[in-house]
Length: 435
Image 1 (cartoon, rainbow, N blue to C red):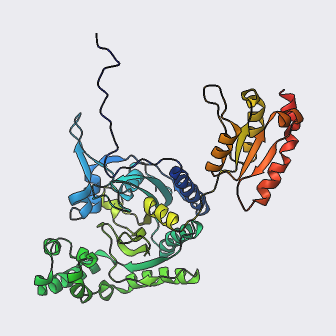
Image 2: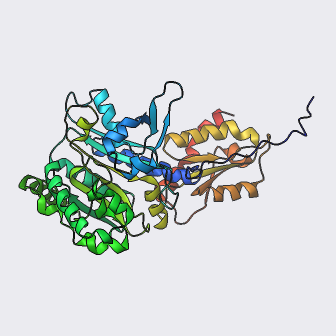
Image 3: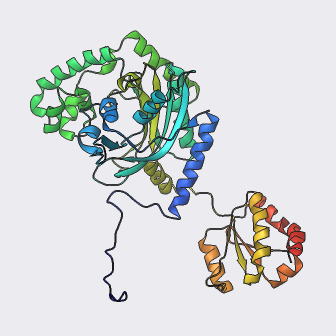
């Protein structure tokens, strides 16, 4: 018989590299961001969609393109050992939203405005703002082809940045035109880069005939002169594509949204056409893009649906939260912390606290440990550490008189909240009736 006291301790397990736990108090910042997103999406009449984190690998190969970093290097793909299916943890969610729209005929009665929040997965070298499990907020307007909806999604992303108080963000915009225009530009790019073949690095040479547009996105300092002299896609756009971009820009101008045209702005996925855009900051180093998106009118057909126009964006939640933390933007604090002197007061105290919660006041109550409450000094220390603005004190005198003592823990006070708490004595009848 084995003595359990001498049995070897199990090996300690830790999270997978690049896949992080989100713990209090940081999780409160995530919740605040999510709440802001939900409120904003309701204002723009976007509805929530939740898709599986695992999809058939073919969805991303078809949708993103075989010659992309994501498909070539970064996807977590595996074979289902039960039936042999090739599956992938989603590296992005636009393809999944489109697949769901096709499968469930969401566009049968017209266009749909959708949004999502959730984890994505890419096998990258973990670094600031870039993780193997990361989270995105996304908005997708499916079935709408006009430039006014391009502008709508950009205005919505801009409004979210303003709502979160994020400063130092620049909006860059470009047009990728239509496929036939890109084909003409592609041929000109290949000719240009072939003429400067010796200046290209190994990755650029590999991509030259596969996806030359991606060379424009290279960060290699040695290639910047050659890239800067490359033919511009704008010179190959037809009148309709130029008019589409001009219409988007006119709406942004009318709403006072500053932006610049970046002729080198491209997207990493193959499905984009016409409008593309990014919100960029200098506050996050090399990982400066916090939101990116554009129009993708051909993705529905690529993944097996009927042709339908669409436009959308995705925003990295970790990057946004990093930016919020840098700018010291406060998360909504706890309103009050309840301190009490006797475990016998719990029924009456909790009745009062529930009344406060019904009024929208957030409350944390001191709990007993093995049936014993900590001393008052320890409780006030915990109240201060909780970040609460006020402490509510339930002592023997307060319980006897049916009132509560309110103690300021933070400066400045919040007048509306203080007024609500000053009225706690109105609960006297509730406290006394529970006695």
